[in-house]
Image 1: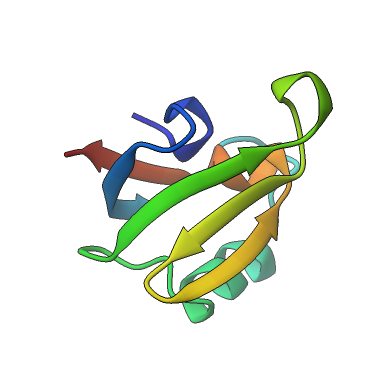
Image 2: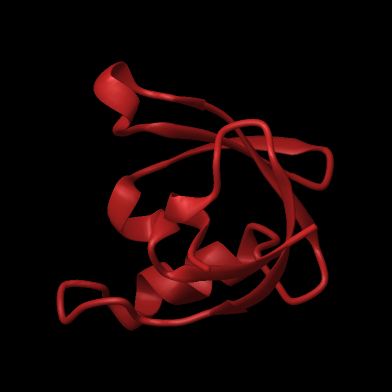
Amino acid sequence: MLLSDLPTGKCAIVEAVVSSSEKMQTATLQRLKALGFIGGEPVQILRRGLGGREPLAVQIGETLFALRLLEAQCIQVRSL
């Protein structure tokens, strides 16, 4: 499952960060990993933007980030 598909409020575990489209650059994938989106980390979507779209308010560990939908589609998660 992709992080973008995770229901709001539900917890999951990060499995991997992968390129979801040709638009996604390697630098962006490396930045996501540097921010803490690495295998085994707990993650939760706290809120979504208007209409359930972006930005996504995402908590990884103890840190809160705002992600674009394209970025969230690069994070594979396993639902708990």
